[in-house]
Length: 447
Image (cartoon, rainbow, N blue to C red; front, side, top):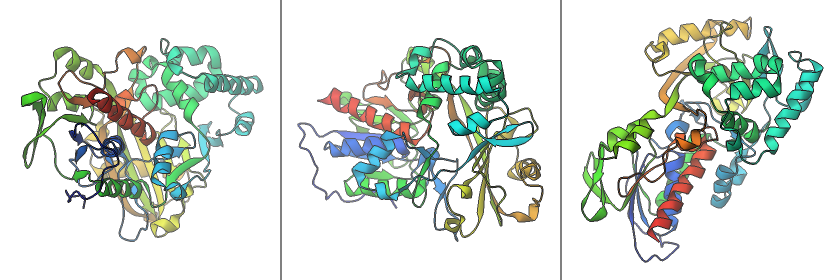
């Protein structure tokens, strides 16, 4: 699937110069860049090291499932205009679903909804005054058009001052610690928290069949438009070639292109492109990120009534979120299995990256009776484990000054990574925006 095919489609636009463009990575950013570049009339080839398209949004499917399931939990918000706009262009909006599952937070060993204004007013963890204060400050943040005006201050200091100690220590500090760990949470810029509050909606979206279904359908559409997609083709090096070309070393030999867009982590790019200048390499290496560990459990019965549990670290849970996916989409799409995610963001040197799957299963299921006292390990039908050391970029104060330009100093080489979607959080919506942004820059430079 997704092998190079014969080019038969008539291109939509005439161009003065047909460019050969390589894209490394078949995630949402890489496929979106390919979409705009091929529509502009250029020759596009995508190299993907893995066995399927999708990147961090990729999924899998058990034999008795109708839908795919994401390895790392994903959903869309109603405000995600970039991914939804792309889907509109493709004519697939009827395949987007927007249920309203319930998210809860832990307070004094009980779980409470906190995903609507009414839920905030009822939340017992705040005084009445602080409930109003929380709502007013959240509304103010949503009204700010550009959160980078807040990037000169940490979220820790800003939120403590404006939300008050009770709200901050009960709700927001645990969120920051869960996402960035005790090592970094005090240093994260307020612009990141602004983006989180600005973009989120109570309704959450998915694609019929799962994200993998969407991404594979998108890849087939790109192939129909003459994009070549090569799976299990890991690029080992990028270097300058003659006549301002860029050369990629691939398993099938060196390939020359006019441009190359690398949708990889900043640190990986430093290894792939040793000819990058020292200042640019140092900027890439200075960026920090958290890894992610996610365990998926297929149960033979429902565990809870809720979709998402936010769990503060330090209260005895071995992960930061429990997500019962089949309280979001129907279990009938998974052959009746009840799907549970147990996920955590962690430093790359955390022991979870070294423990075996069996050891992690034992740690994670040990707390499931706290969600349902009747839980028994006999409920578990199957488990899957996914780990990545590049999942959540860490944005420090004035992070906009640290972001590497999309255009690298190496002629023809471009970078499009999660670390460049700032101040927004990682996700397919902003990956689409980034992919189309870098494609636009390539086209503008070559006009």
